[in-house]
Length: 167
Figure 1: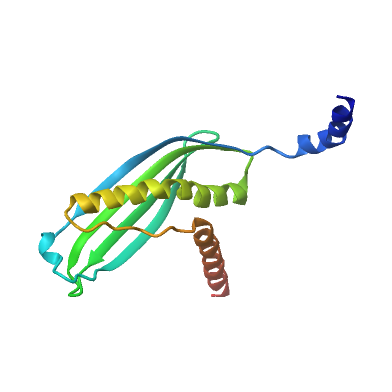
Figure 2: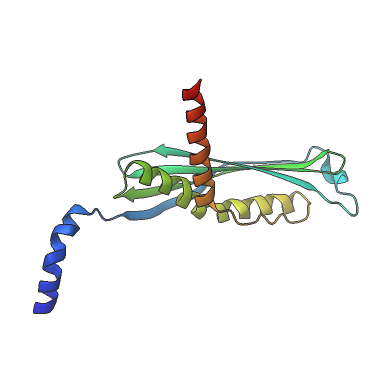
């Protein structure tokens, strides 16, 4: 017991200076959902080799002090070889997250990478479910590295900012 107290005493000032990061998922929900098949099932002939286009974006809204709504927007457009739209799926998968102990860039990075990483499996399941219910073969979306996407977006934003300052 004495050893624990003595070992803890030198660390006590450091603990006061370092904030503990606390994170919890409060709720996960679908904010918007859309499925369109403008050409119906006639767009899926035998030997169908679709062209899949996927667009991603994230919205972050501060609700209260440490409560944030993060919305992962995914739009998947699948075209035939003749460039006809077979189907289009749009999902806005949202979550409420409580985050404390992070500020500035660290908070932004966390909200823009870790929260979408949590939301993505829900969105992927919703997309696959809609596609199958629409009569099309399952659409298995590959995993996404949101940390790498965030880092790429930061690099692009810096390049754009440097380009604007040069003009």
